[in-house]
Length: 167
Image: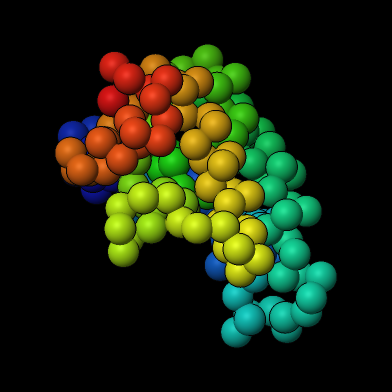
């Protein structure tokens, strides 16, 4: 989609997590400005040595990383629209933006693919529940929501009933 927008003389900026959470970069790739943020809340063991503390990043960097996303967007000029997937609740602070934000339903963390319900809670699914509840909690804050399928739309309407009419 970004390449087609570029071909139509639009400018596109993609903000994403850096594969190496220690490194920030900002460069053009195929005409698209790609900003890779440091300080992500995940760890790739092939890049950084893993440890118990680093494995807990998903909790202690959740808020700071999402604030970083908002801060980066606020530095951009002439933004017409922001699109962000619901996955990972990266739109956590984006309801404060002064431009339209489109939430793209993609893959909810709590979706149990075996039965199309919410995953069962247990100690192994603690993080899924923690992040998944944040994903679901922010969705009703946004006016524009798109879905890649009717079944995914139906799942969200079942588990986030206050979204009715928003998708």
